[in-house]
Amino acid sequence: MAHAGKLNRTGGLIERKTTMRLGMTIGYSGAQLKLPVARVKRAEELGYDCVWCAEAYGTDAVTPLAFFAGQTRRIKLGTAIMQLAARTPANAAMSAATVDALAGGGRFIAGLGVSGPQIVEGWYGQPWGRPYYRLKDYVAIMRKIFKREEPVTHDGREISLPYTGEGAAGVGKPLKSILHMNPDIPIYLGAGNAATVRLAGEICDGLLPLGLTPASADEYVPWLEEGFARARKNGVEKSFETFDVVGSVHVDVDDDVSGALARLKPEVALYVGGMGHRNKNFHKDMMSRRGYADAAERIQELYLAGRKQEATDAVPDEWVDEKSLVGPPDRIKERFGRWRDCSLLNSVYVRTKQDEAIEVMAEAAGLKPAT
Image (cartoon, rainbow, N blue to C red; front, side, top):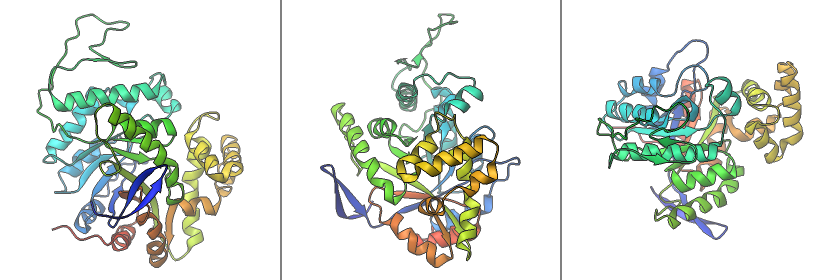
């Protein structure tokens, strides 16, 4: 990874990158599953680094990547994210290792996240519990499974193997994967608050930062530094040089900037207004923390009252523009400079349904077509 220049934050150093990798995401499906196969293949041709897939409560994040593994040669395959409640850590490790093997090895990135209590308890029927400790146990178990050093046992605060809790038959046996897995499948964490970002720095290989923009990058630096310090205390060398931070940005190519911003507002209204409980909504909290508290309160109030269009109309243009790259190609390329120059970011994945946006962003990032 090439770097030049330095940025000082809380006594630490982040070296400024001269190149940035690009990825793309297909998100999760709507009512009908339609995979953008041609767009993913074109992204690979252009030199994109990774295709990411998400899940909520419909299509899952892993199966489409297995399909893309058979349609592509080089591009990495990442989950952004696999929800913890959807799988045991053993099943997550099995899924990641299987797709990685299908893809030829060294291509899968296991991005994990906790989702929110509404989905965890309402869709998966799992207790919200203590997600911080569940994450620690989950990642530790996955790493043990990948490495195959011995039959897996784990005595955790939230998850233990073998299981000995309520309803156990008492005959659980420590096991070692039959499949000789890639022992180095990277694990990333989708996170947006201080505790989970610190945890990502401590135990993971990368961060998928919720809502990061170039203007907010400084929030994450001390949190990650604290996580790296914890890792070093445990004998694991961690630093910004060895850790991957992958941002995301909506891209919409359109000569009408206002129209492009308007198309992105319904999603903001959904997440800030309705994706979470009134008193526990990570997206609303983040918008408030970034200086838009009044707007966030109004959006949630309107959305929960069933006035979804008014909630959409209440989303400020400035908030959408800060998180997105919209407008004519020249405006997108010029504004991408803030993302490219953000010292914290190693990569950005493009969120778009436009083939043209994939081309424009490749030009903006100066990608070299794959050979």
